[in-house]
Image (cartoon, rainbow, N blue to C red):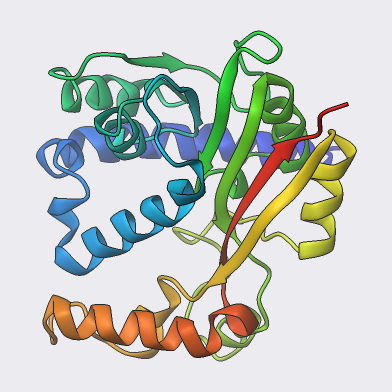
Length: 258
């Protein structure tokens, strides 16, 4: 009899194979992310990355571990701000392409590794940073304990939130429950998320919800409006409704000092 965890691990392996094939099929697009995704998606990427790290001040001299590093966009962004970056991802193909993407940058290292078993020493980095990836690992709370273990100062996570608007959109058929038709996404509840950090000895510094890609599902704007109009719409909607309806979140936690 197959357990729920075994099924998640099997789906993860299938996802790995598909993502690797997709990365090589779309090599040029992958290496040039997020610009290759269009100006609206580029704005979303860089806006959320800026929001994630703004509380850190200067990143010069900081050692940051990026979990679920994928395309290398986060590693590139953090490196250009002066950080030394170790980016981990379980996908071999994507990791090779991420190295190619950042080949001209110093202080960036890419390692093939599982976010649930991170090959970094206890308190081995200043900051652990997970961008839109923990919802795809079989055991998200285990991944939280791992990033807490390796972080000396702070943890920053951007990921999927279990929002009412997401459930409604799924029921109405506006979005699919399973990504790519078969992959389940773990969506965090605030109470569970906060408890996971507190149990690992961290204090919550900030928490913010955002209406993110779901805006695309309700208003088809990708190719119909300018980046400036989309930017205005995104910021306005989030200023009014983001804290109540946001389907993504940014959380920053600080290690508790004795």
